[in-house]
Amino acid sequence: MLYSMAKEEYLAHIKLVRNYSDATIASYKGDLGLFGIFLSKQGCSDLIGIDQTLTIQFFTEQQTLNPKKPATIRRRVYSLSSFFKYCCFRKYMPFNPAEGIQLPKKERKIPQVLTETEFGKFISVPILYRKHPWLAKRDKAVIGVLAFTGCRRSELLGIRVKDINLESRNLLIVKGKGNKQRIIPICSRLASSLNEYLEVRPRANTDYLFLASNGLSKLGLNGLYKLFNRHLQRCGIQKQEITIHSMRHTFGTRVLRSSKDLVSVQNLLGHSSIDTTSIYLHVTDDDIRKAVDGTFIT
Image (spheres, rainbow, N blue to C red):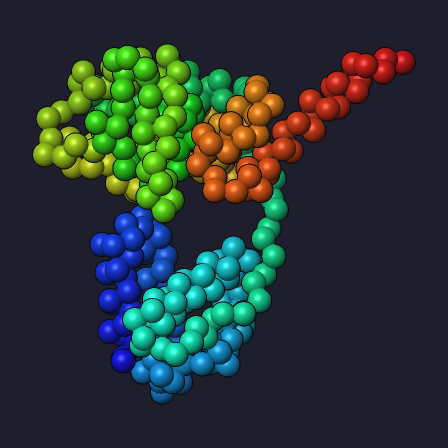
């Protein structure tokens, strides 16, 4: 079977059957596209001509021409391996050429987070729109979700009106990686912001909670970036390393510092493995130092 045909079939499968997120599908599509370009240069167009030697050559060439971080390499291996597994299941290929390829070690970087002062500014600096006042309520609610729930970008953009319960229990339902749902408690401050936004949210032919500036369609990723960066400037936060994902790290850090419960942080963030959550243990370093200094006074 032609590689190009199998690729399109697989991308349709992970979208319609596996319900992968748009971001994941885009990443897999890009990775498989790069592999397709490589195959064309090698004069290979059929799946039957793909073996492990050719697959390893692809990764070696990619790193030589355009070196990437370990996380990107790992994702590309996963992308191709998942595709090959599908092809094996469909009996398009006799084996998985990516099986057994050694993955680079995961990077264990300490996450970038907002300081207490910066966090205070982030959640309290006023948001004003003279021409379209409802956008101020929207932005305040978005900022609140980023600060008080630990949602990923895709999770925030995927929230629908029906996913929030503000009448009885103050809960938010989000769909995470692998289409897994989790329930996040909403603090009173965020509940208030969401209620204020819902009162002025324009009527639209979409039930996605956050609307674009036109008031008609769903807020997109570019719109979210602009909203976030504009608010950082408004707050006077000039750290280039602070991103939308940094707010997820900030949330996890604050919850762990307060609760000392790693499992609770794991559940709130939707991590499948507690090893992933353990990255937030760095926040206890300062607490440990304070405890030692406070105990052994000289």
